[in-house]
Image (cartoon, rainbow, N blue to C red; front, top):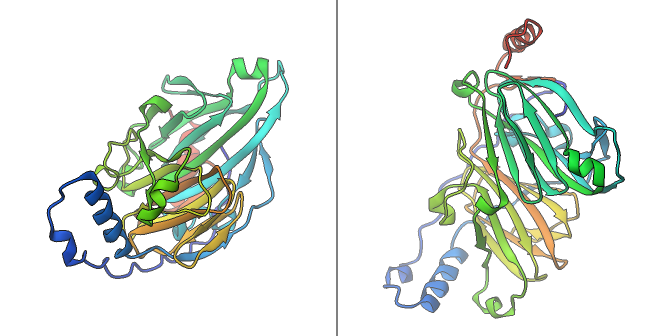
Length: 347
């Protein structure tokens, strides 16, 4: 969606040692749901917590095309190894659009070397591309497009939404591809809300369980089945987690499992949270960047009905060359991508 300039690459933070082993008390046989919950809570307290490396406030917004008024969430850290495998994050906060006959969005443009992931929360996004995919996603849906060797696509508010108007809220993420996948065939994955598994958030303290009201859940868009106990719908090219989290209750700490060594990015869509054992505050449209170490993320909402988008993944230890709509490994590959596009060899 967004044309970008190449930026300086920062070195990756080294991953710390593996998480500690569970205590000997976990050897006992599980006999009831209550005992399983109690033992699970005990185990979680003995795991290593991910701690905050840096907190970024909400950046100024800008327009992408005439339909997406976005926060560039990653600031000047976009397209650096510091956030690998994630490259870019544009968030369009809820905005009222009046009915119109004018198409709102971004016309045809190319991509190569990465994936775009669009999440709709309110309103509808219409996608069309040069390999024949055409789709509309609505509230809760996701479109996962693998540009790979090259694709030309367009993104607009859907025709129905354009004519009726209403509140529009969405995000677009750019996810890097390992070098071995950058020149594969393009692919499109439509992921409907009904196909995204929803699991309960786990209380950090067992005694808080009876206090819970409302929806305290994780929508697992991408993630390992062994970690989350469900099969996520997104088929990914490297280990990645994408979690849409809703926290109805304030002042109750929850623990979210994240594989150790994965870059973890915590974005507050709505409300406010504290994160980590040291309870670092993250305000609305702010983002917490976590250290690589640890296998558990502790979140506490300080406001009711807080909503968080969590991005994580195994860093890709390869050079990043990014310019405009192309993300490759070398400057020469970027030049070739431009030539291929100009000569009609993309998509």
